[in-house]
Length: 210
Image (cartoon, rainbow, N blue to C red; front, side, top):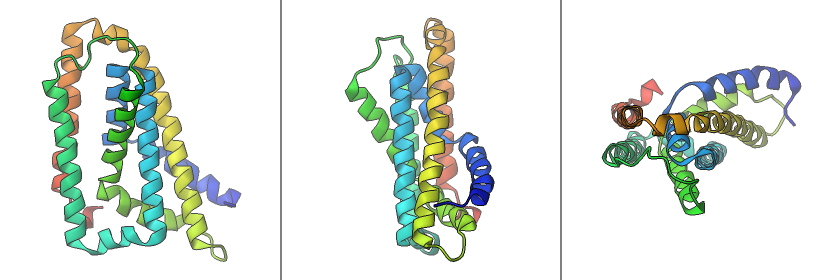
């Protein structure tokens, strides 16, 4: 059970961090506009599931390995950066990315979930962040692991709620965006550039900067 005083401090901080633009929210936004609301919500679910993985890693001490080992941090960082660049280039090359099509099927929703999950899990900055952020709200006298897990689940739930709202509202602009070729092309270039930019930024990230 999380103390009310902890919630009053944790929830605003977690919301502020979730609202800050990053590769996760950009990907959810992209999928919402290109494939509809359900695909965006699936991406939000993938991100939240990734947060659950990072929470479990923090409880088990695996995140500490990433923080302590330059080799482990670099390996995960390079894979994550390469994946973001890959998604960005794929967006740029797909000229039909933002063409208006019927609501996508469960296969596309699964792809949205998997890709969002991978973006989150393959970012070592998120793993180390969870290791540094969550313990600040642990109360003495209680189970450390249980409190970390509860806080991590709450963080992921808040993130899912925010990104789901993002998916709902951005999907409402889908028709207006996709019916104008110049606008859809501009959005495609912007989405690709942001994803590649986050990938390049991650590739040059130092452990000390996390």
